[in-house]
Each structure stands twice: as structure tokens, then as C-alpha cells.
Amino acid sequence: MSLEEKVLEKMKELDKPVKSGDIAKELGVDSKEVSKAIKKLKEEGKIESPKRCYYQPK
View 1 (spheres, one colour):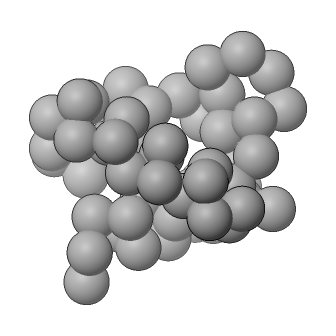
View 2: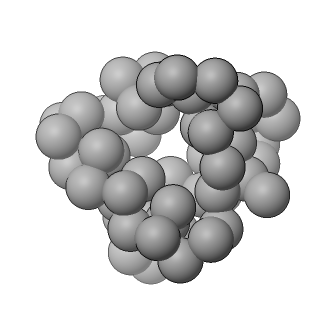
View 3: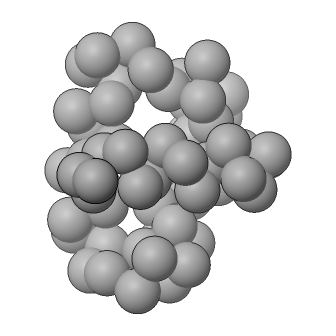
């Protein structure tokens, strides 16, 4: 499973808008990696940002 998939799964699991740092802590990975994954997921239209620095699945 790619990091993007793990990030998306974790967002669905938490079921609320989350910050990249929170996901990084949950997954035990570097927040820079999570930020890259979030950027890619956003470009693919799989997640949205309801407010600055917070993300959730569409």
C-alpha cells in the first residue's frame, strides 16, 4: 500500500478534517512525506481542504 493510500485510509478512519502533522503522527512517518502524499491526493481530486492546513476525503 502506498503512502497516499495509507493517508487517505487514515483520513477516512478519523472522519474529520485533519492536519498533515496529525496524520504523520498516526502513521509514524515524517510529516514532509505526508505533505507530499496530501499534495498528490489533492491533485488527483481525492481529498479537499475545508479550511487552511486541514484536509479530508471528498
